[in-house]
Length: 296
Image (cartoon, rainbow, N blue to C red; front, side):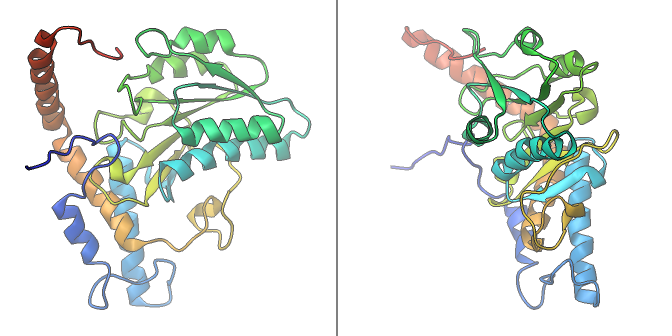
């Protein structure tokens, strides 16, 4: 019996075009060098490939390439964003009470990070609960805002329900508040239009393997104007403008870049195709009776 893979919210296969481009960066006759090796041609070529990928990812979310920080995936991006903001404020404003707003339906990478800060670093956390449709209403955020709120961290698309958070409305609420807005967009980027200028977020997490790129690579969008300040969570070389040290894996970055390029080209057509498939599935199963949509 042939099996059909439907678990695309967990991970996607690597697109064959992406895999081919990655393979060209692995062997001696390819673009394999360390992008930080600027004393020879091989390093320059690798660095150029990395910067092309940075632009491709930036273009997918309408960002400046200088606002893209490479990470190992959305889990690391979430940790860097949340811990990075808190640690920066602890350094700059010692003794200041800090408050974070999040929800109980976030990914574990956010839930566990916020719980860690609450337990060990004296950060007060408000845990919002969704309504009956699985949505976090912007007014819940407004009602929870305090003078000491330093960060709101909410996912764009829920990884289990598929519900979509009104990020732009929440950002509008924060426009006159000092709190930063972090969005875990692992389930949104590559599947729906994401424009950081429309959303007005300060930090946004991306994972390549959610949109036909390789596992083990991702990015954190960090706003430059005004500049969001973070404390690095990985040290040892000052890579990524001091925000994330580590030798850059050229093949994986070429992979996320190529996946981002393909997504940008195909996103509109894919949205229409997948919406048609969703509606066809629903029409087929609702006649069974006692079947309902779990979420908005």
